[in-house]
Image (cartoon, rainbow, N blue to C red; front, side, top):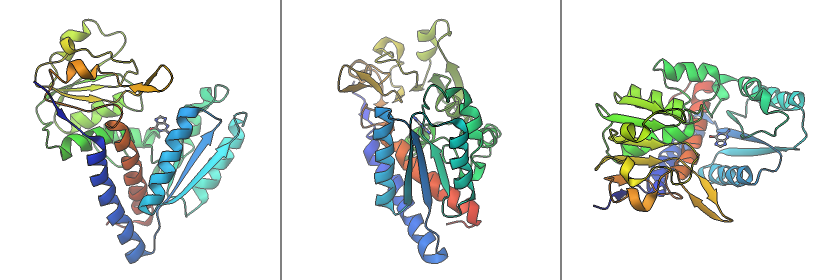
Length: 289
Ligand code: GUN
């Protein structure tokens, strides 16, 4: 069997189109132009590419996009001052501090993310938004796991009643993915580096989400025949090549549907960021479109 290919670009373009329509309505009916500011510290090459893509897509959709570049050596206090200014700026509806932060301010990551006003937190990382997600009040939801859910929904792949297994327990993907699947009535297991007999658990999954950052970790024998496999991994191997957490060539013969890497979940993440920016603008202006 060869699995259905879940093309991220196809689904991302639907989400972007819907977002573009909302932006038009916000502009025409309410004179609101959603604004997004991305703050990037230092020169991490992968982050530079992500931020450039976010900026380009924002402009394409008509979002007022701004990138603030701070030097590698910036102090925690200086970064907090920049965030405080953005919190006060009514033209800025969404604030995103690109991760990872340089080593010297990494220990303050929580303090920095918590400095962003929850209503402007388009990453959905602030404890207020994490708490809302965990209590079933989805508002500003982390972009990558939310993109995975939208992909399942747009592809008409049912979640309710299914056994879902999430590989990885990060704050960015694994944990929010757990809450999103649970809220949609899946039976969810989260596995991680200390999980024993991992393959026995993954083989039970109707929906398997891999977000552990290990190239080609999920092999064909770890997947139940007919499962839906979502690969969140972006692993650089060698100079240029990018591979996922799933051994695509082997798993596509077992799964019923699978996301490729690249061209799968990655493109959905940016679409969901713009979706969140529009949502943040609606929350701040107390309007609904
Ligand atoms: N770095 C990698 N993924 C993300 C993300 O979703 N948000 C932020 N802020 N940084 C990231």
